[in-house]
Length: 477
Image (cartoon, rainbow, N blue to C red; front, side, top):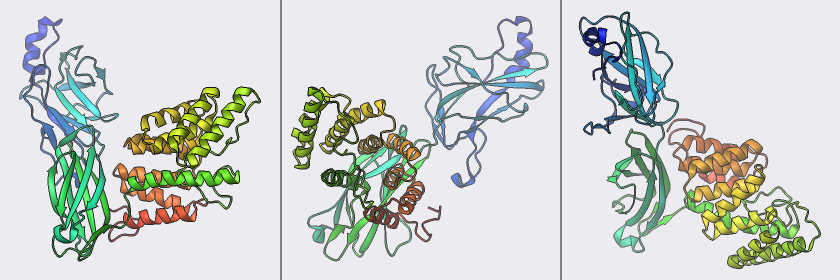
């Protein structure tokens, strides 16, 4: 690519044409860890690129998995030595340009660190002792474009179901979904291994981002079978999800444990019973012996709120108590009506709004539940029960990054919350970070406030997602 001269210096335009415009931007290369590539990249190449023909509106975009970017250039023989280089970058295809910090030295390559994931365009301005090439202005096309993508896709195992006639078919239905802002075409692969094998064997690759596969377990493979789902984005990032619930005998197959997503729903349902017990005892949260309700979004009656003695307040309290009675009987539709009536009379009754959000979650009305939790947290950003409930809704909607952020805020308020640490580990697992998930689960296990029931759940997670050949404290994958 050749760099034009500034039009206001017509007297030296010819000289620049022989010197400055001879500089050519060769390409952009990421600085990758040695383990990410089998050999060093060649000048002008990148690990993953869109090789589309250039046009006035579209340039070739290189995708890289590191924020560290190198721009290579070269001088034609006989060109004047450089005295300086300025680097400009754009995030809106040349509509606006920002000047980066001055590069060190004047040799190729020019290094640049991306502040965040995203698409960037670059333009180099060169200086000699006699002249300078032109700087980019509004509408100037980038000399090179790159998309920085350091985030791995999230892949989830939605359902795993043995066939009813497994003794004849040995068939298992596997349903999955992969999510990422820049997924590759048909990005998913599925592998398996048994207790006797050390390496995963391919079941199928080049699968769509969401789909259903019916797989026949090979004859002779029995016992615990571990499935590994992987998804790859266009930059080459890979996210994995591992599940080892499948148990195969001579005549049948069964699931040893529900997936984390399914167990979260079970936890939410069990939290109703925990809240009911607390309400009957009149305690603030859970059992007086220290038993903690699992991911309980429900409130206790009154929840420490003091109602005024007006007629509207008394009626709001009556509607709230009726809603709680119907909820405990499993009559959630009636409970929703009563909670909303209580809130019509007393919009500031946070306990009623919190329980309404929890019931809406249990009914699958996730958007409404999220809105109610948001209203609570807007008035009281430190409302712990609402934060727990909101994280549960976000995880159910598969907004795992949002759930991750919500749980981080909760743990800043109470670093000793064992239940929050367990849920933080679950969300980390959904995001593909098994190491962070294990660390969070171990913190839940070590928490002084962890109940026996919660420790049992955490122990199952740690057992399932341990690293083969290493202790649980190992960082190896």
